[in-house]
Image (tube, rainbow, N blue to C red; front, side):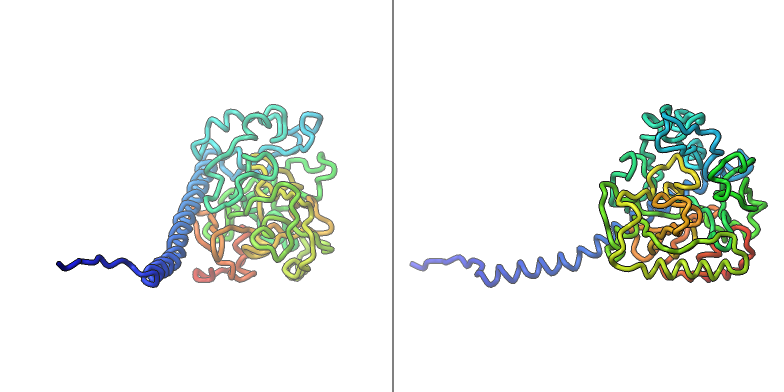
Length: 367
């Protein structure tokens, strides 16, 4: 009588199979992660496209871009606004044009974002259209839900010419605002319409991305990417604005100083303010929802020794665009297009894309 024996896997065969599966997973995982990031980047592009179209509809209805922030006199600074005034600005004005009419109707324009009439209602809202899906931080540095990744461009380096972007203050009487006059005095203050965009809407950035600032008194150093892109670093640089012929040299000096920030430098404030508040800001808190074309994408942000804002960001500081997308940032232009600009974009090209009226000549293949 013949006994039939069943053959089982040996230990070596089992280990070989497990090793092959592990190698296949290791090969597949980066491809899956890349596909997921491509989908997130596409969604980010769509968010910026919708925001740009909403801004075009706003301009069609109002004749000009909204102010980066409103006149200081419209937002009281008193016991009801201990952190203010943070006048409601562009992030509030565009709401009806991005299907957020309810949030707009809940906004009280007699108060700033910190005002008692807004802080418990609209200032606590999370607006999904303002958040990049690649953002990994889910709690903002001010109210946890009110952060924003899409920041409005205030222009190129202030040392060359301040307030050269599409989003600028509307200051009918700057002399009535003691302490802020020098921060907004410029021939470039608004209103800004397409007729004043002499460089062309297709060559002028409207929005780009910025990573959310850190909350919780966390100190990060310049070498700790990506978190170092979420904070600002102090410098001893005296940032002169509207410096005429000396402007480009001053701008370049600030960029070089910022990029060579010593590795032991602590940020300006352990709690940072980038993206802290989508609905309000002023000339000393521009990092809330604005950026400038001073340093190229995904580089450090730095604060001048004579900053108008310190950690929250002034117009003469270096407020960089940043994102978690590998290699660059999405940028929405004033013609409504959205393009992905690489970190390697030339500095002069980046400066030129930030300005609406400085007469720079750009080739179609320059970026």
